[in-house]
Image (cartoon, rainbow over all chains, first blue to last red; front, side, top):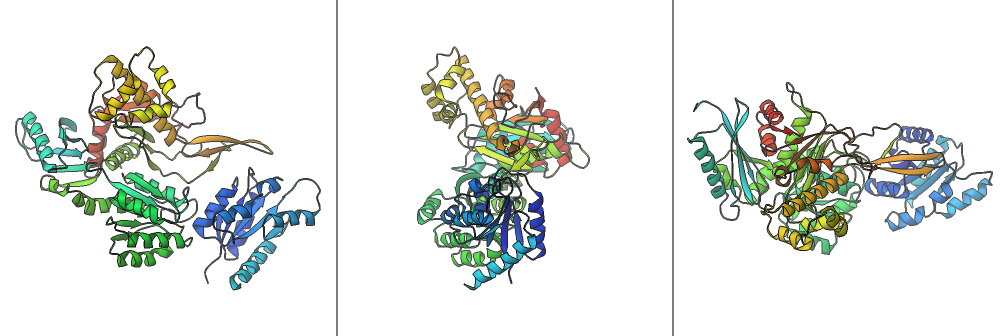
Length: 140
Length: 465
């Protein structure tokens, strides 16, 4: 079976690289082909990389608390670029201050993300969900 | 004269002149030079023989030469079209590969080619097409679509395929079914963030030697010489690389930049890694090739004199010609109609210098990297795009408008880092060298056979300002 390709990176003006490296390691270990764009990645960079690599999923990390602003329009931009059906995942410190998680999650789902993860989520969970989601998508 | 002395003859078939340099290989010196109008339209050997005769007349005797090697930018140069997927990614990588192979890039296309674009491509009539798109194992659909379009077109140019390797068998079958010559080579961007243009460059050069020389009717010259080895820009690039890196036994000058100002374009070659020199700098964009050539098609001192003025801004340009009562519009349009014209009056000469300065500055700013400051929650962050050339210690200038300029140091001065534009990463304190013997192309050719001697001759004859 061909490996699934995922584009990984930290969105926006955001230098938090540790989680990014851990996610890359976890994904590779589980057999994904990982295109890691590192830190300071724009929406456009993610989408262009997804086009060239024909990626199955984009995993967006956002740690600086500006996630809500930075992620706006992500799905719409994918649709414009002809990658409207790509699987979108986001996680990290998406918002600042104490906010109700369910509420935050809903907001990001509303922006078109298929999976939204809270701070401190285990990479294992993310990878397992991703495999399941892509398998399900492959059967559809 | 000593008949046993080994001389090398190096020829540049240019679009206007056939230039020739004779080098004494033992004495490592320049012994003669000649130029004669190029005769590509009739019989390329006419101009070549005329130049030969000049050299023989000057030597006093006809002699034989162990090396007679040529490069060519005649008959339009090596005209290429490049095709990729995303403009900033594989389309840019393909363009860089073609420029690095000494091509004149006449068209750059991205995404799926439309019928209109294919028609445009047919009328451009390139010598070689470079088809890229998709990382290895990445997108296949676009490059296959584009190969299909090319296969059905009326184009006869050889197609170098340097895209997603997974699609290469399919692409070969498609192109061969349309009776197109296709050469499959390594992907110019095998993975995101990896630029790999060397293989494509050498394949392009092979195709140039094997196919293009003949297609352009230049092969007739090979009755007189041993071969046209490469396009002229490649010869200059090869010389630049030799000068920078040196050989096993002869030390080079280290990382450097070559500024080549011409009548139709201004080329910049950098042989430099260009990595960030400041701590904490974040590098973005496609990785830079160590050997990088950029060509500014709007910055030629003759054919495009008016576009240099436009790029600077007419009023600003006029202000720099302080005291001149030259009619700028007339003078500039006169230059584009008479590409061989040399300035007669002092005012015309001042105009030429101003044009050369502007071309050098703009071309260098487009070639060098830039710094942008972005503000994050934890303060400002510097992001670098392209090469940081601030540490470069050597800038070499070539091309008629620079060599024959009365004040080359002023033109060179424009290539240096300036606080007027601190975000442009130009060399900070380089030494300037002028190629006033017009040798660089010959050095590039000679480096194919006698690299040590070529390097020593270059070091001897480049004049430090």
